[in-house]
Length: 509
Image 1: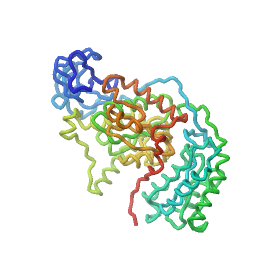
Image 2: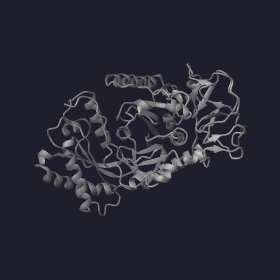
Image 3: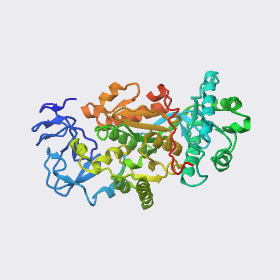
Image 4: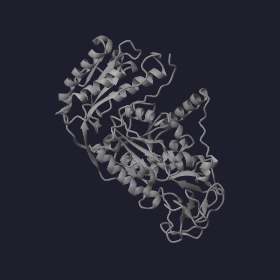
């Protein structure tokens, strides 16, 4: 991509059909024709900055990502540079409240080859999980999984994707009630219940705060696809490993009987993540993922937006997309919780654009936060849930979480996400068993540099080789292919076994 585009080859990036601005993929000279928009640049436009595509009257809404980013402070002519000198925050955020009723998208029916579980839900992988109630049983859980692999225990069981140890750093030295305990408890049982697991073996030490028997009383009972024991009960580490292998042997035959079958795309549950972002993430990969999200919602599927600190400043637009006042109130409650939480720890929820952000083309806090929110598309917000709580609706759901990607994705999987889509601009090495993760680059340079890790190059949007719509269609095609059994890049590399990171809140005692 050139730093300067000539009169003959100037193009711009359109992020949404409803936008009245486009983005310069390189420096555009004054007088350059923007062929795709039918306008001429009235100013020299820096790379990453916005250009008006039609006349925007003073007081009129300026839209990017299909969302409000501000209002014009003066009349803006087609082809003019749009930035801090002619737009400002909109106090009323006019027009956004009408979006939910106006939203409509149709998609031809799609399907994937997945696994139908006894509770009716659909998985995209057929794993056995070896979960731990406490960090003290983590080594035993890993030894059980490693011993199963080394001994060839899965030989002949071709319909089973593998054995996944799920270990963590908590489970004891904590209160046996309250917010911290509740989050860990529901993260563990939610993960165990994820439809990508066909069977679960839970291993404890025996004396921990998070007792397996209590967890079973609340959520599970020992049966054909859920087994459990403690190291203390069976007589120590060596016997525990042997005990675990015997349990796995008894689980394998029934699990191997399950076959992939055609399942409507409406039953996919996709967790949305972004990390290692750059200046193009909000221009290419995030809007493209948002387009794919809208396509999946139109098919009847579910997408989970998370990372609460990274929507701060744009949350009012999610309020405007809420399907009811009750959903909006739940979102507001989570934002207020975070303001209290960060204040207690001496931090701030403050995302005002810095001088560097503005130099890169970001004008308002809305535009900055919308770069992250863009991956959720434009569909109505159907629900807001707390971290790792079960899904109650389809469509776009917001799950409260920190911005730390592995922690956020862990909560999404516990809430029911069977796949993860992860955008990155600087490169991400991440996987997420039991739910396969596909990675999307915001620029072509990092894609070429990390081809073994990244599944789709969205940098072609910036170069003009593809549009947001085209890339959104490609992302959905890839999601359905991976859901049907094709390995993602992170799966090929063996990622996902150590990325289980529950959110730890509360005192460690």
